[in-house]
Image (spheres, rainbow, N blue to C red):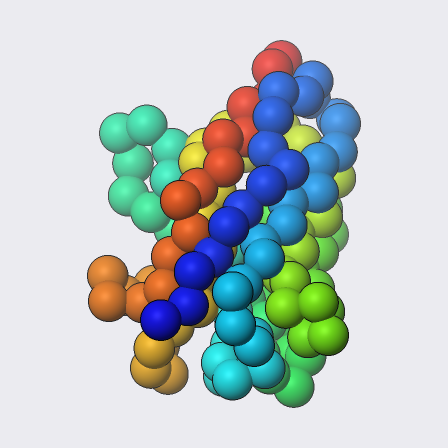
Length: 120
């Protein structure tokens, strides 16, 4: 069993930056990929960014050029650097470690979530 603990969320003005961290209780190098999801009120959870074991990254279109996902296997930590934040980025952000090949399933390992609020 792996536990994921996120931190780094908060309230920031539009245009500001935040860095989210996700610390795993076990080795993250065991996972084929890890990702960040977010869920805004009244909306479905959506994939924000994904990083593979080999370091390849994928971003949803709306965050490309603003967000950067990275991982430090030695620290068992996943990061999400968020720059040029917009009010529409407001959501609870979740760290995800998939049990299988496809991320985002209910059966995956999930963190408890961290709130990001961007004011206009």
